[in-house]
Length: 348
Image (tube, rainbow, N blue to C red; front, top):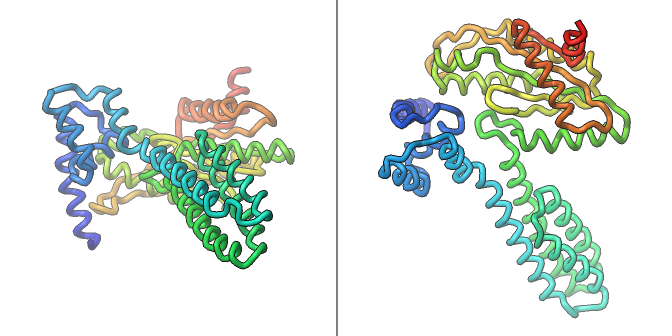
């Protein structure tokens, strides 16, 4: 489908979605919009039937119901996929046990390793844990492959199949960790990355900086230009922040119009410098809609910066950066504030 046609279809669907959501008093948030976009597109029969049933009964779309629809048809997809993959892998490993059982004395250790893995998989393992056990089985499979031609040929096929399973888990991990709109890491992936990076800092004594970035007056921007253009702005902000941070830094959409950047091996003064560079760029940028080519004017960001304290709870680390962000917003916006600014203000 060419770009012009896709834009025309999108505009046509948006003209249906917004009035429909307004008629049923559904707040036009990114999550709700995702649900109703899918409803109008007709691509998801189960979602369409569910909403039609609610409409038939003339029931209200409460905040709880809207959240439940999103979780059922979007947020929970990843967990269902993970559960299926876990079950498939468990069945596959049991098949391996049946095939190699009693083939040779050299396979006894391998059987024990596979049996242990099957037992692990009966629990509620995470993507990371599953990846680890699959890697362990691949290593064991390659080791045992040297014992006997028949075993080697059979286990060579097994290794290839296991590696395909590992790749499938890798794809599932990526899908479960990416924000659907901006294409960068989501909040879940951010929490995992922050735990990993601060854990490394606890081991080697290095600094970790954290920036929380919020687009100023984004609600007014959405009200003036509409949510489709608002999504364009979120993508633009994401793209530019990504260009301004280093390869080892970690960018995530923290929620709504808020972004987070984890800066490994970065002190608080250096984190403030990165933040100021980001702020300056957006303060000078002039925006234009890629769909309508309408000039949108400028947009600014406020940024809070904090530095990790060895061994502290991660919620405390995030909270200091969050307080710095709100200090920046409450003292005029379009500025950078650090955790030390908040402390100095409290003392004054």
